Length: 396
Image (tube, rainbow, N blue to C red):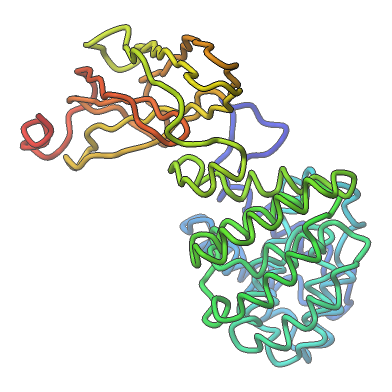
C-alpha cells in the first residue's frame, strides 16, 4: 500500500503516514465535530511514544487516545465520528490513499462500540463510504454474528459501491490483515447468499471482492466452492449482459487454475491430457542472480478439433533456510487448431525482489499445459547463500 502520488523510489513506509501531523489533522476534525472534544489531551496521548510503534500499533494508539478525549456515551461518540468525516468518495480508486487517515476511526469503533450495535453500525456504514470498515466489523461478527449478517443483508441494494463491497469483504474467512472470526465458516450458506446477491454487481471494485470471497470458500470447502464456480460460470454464459460474472469466476478460480485442478480447468474449456508436449528447453544451465532465463516449449494438437490450452510454468529451488520453494507462474493461453503445432517462449528474471530473494542452488522448471507437466529441466543458480550449511547438499 503506497500513496498514489509517490514513485517507487520515494515511497514512504506506510506506518509513517500515521504521525504527529495526522494526529493534528484528526484533532481539528474531531473538535469541529464536537465542541467538548479534548483536543489537547488527544494530541498529548496520541503522540506520546507514537514514533516507536509499528503500523498496527500506531492506529490502535491513536484510537485509544480518541477514547480518552471523548468520555461520552457510545452513541454520542459515534455521531462525533460521523460528523468529522469528509464527503463520500465518489469512486473506488483512492479508498486507501485518500481515506487512510481514518483508519483509527475503524479501530475506535471496533474497540469502543460493541455496547451500542445500532450506533456503531451506522458509523461503520458512513466510514465505509470514505475508507473501509472491513476490519472494524470483525468484533461485531465475532460477538453478534446473526445480527451483523442481518444488517449487512439489509444493505445489499445500497447505492454506494463501497458499502456493497464491504458486505463481501468484511465477511471473508481469510481477509488479509484481519482477525479471524469464529462462526463465519459455519455461516457459509448465508455468506454465499450475500455473494449471490452481489455477483452481478456492475462495479469491478465489488466484483473483485466477491471473487476473493468465493476463493476463500473454495479453500475452506472445496466441493461447495467447485459447485459454485461451475454454476456461476453457466449463469455467466447465459446472462452475458448482467455484469461480468465470468470474470468473477475466473478470478475466484485463479488459485485452482494455477494448481491445475482438472475440474476447474474444464470449467474454462481447458481439457487435460489431450495436447502433446514436445521439447521443453531452457536457454542456460547456469545463471547468476539478476540474469534472465528463456524458456521454450513445443505443443501439438493431435485431435481433430480445436484445443484451448492454458500454459504455465513451475519453478522450484532453495530458500534461505535450505527448504525448497515451489511457485507456478503464468505463461500464456492459446488455441491450437486440429493437427496444429506451436512453439512458445517466455522469460523469467532471477533478479532479487523485495518479496523474493534468489539463493544459490539447483533450480528446477517444468511447463504445465492444462495442468499436465512437461519433463523437468534444471539450472544451477549463483545467488545469496542460505543460513543452512546443508542447504545445497539437500537439493542435489
